[in-house]
Image 1: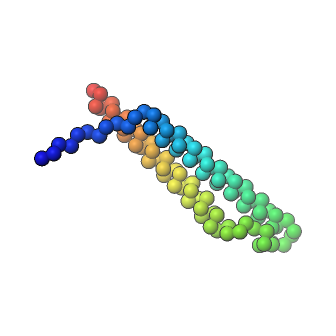
Image 2: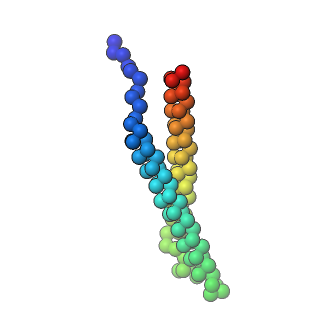
Image 3: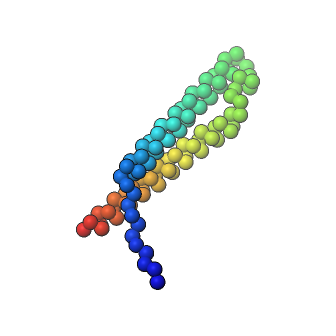
Length: 99
């Protein structure tokens, strides 16, 4: 029978790199959501500025952009929650192994 050894911890540099990439991912997705929101609000105001609603002044594929922006934010929050949970779990495991 083969023996299964404990998993080897990842190098500290790799862990830091993953967290830096996660932070950059957060910045990019939040920027995308903010830019989309500003553009959508501006387009809606522009379409109503003439006194009559003009749908040609709205953003093209508005529903797809709205869905993409909101799905990106939801997935980002889920990814952050999972990352923090894994970080806490690994720290808890490291503390119990060191005692």
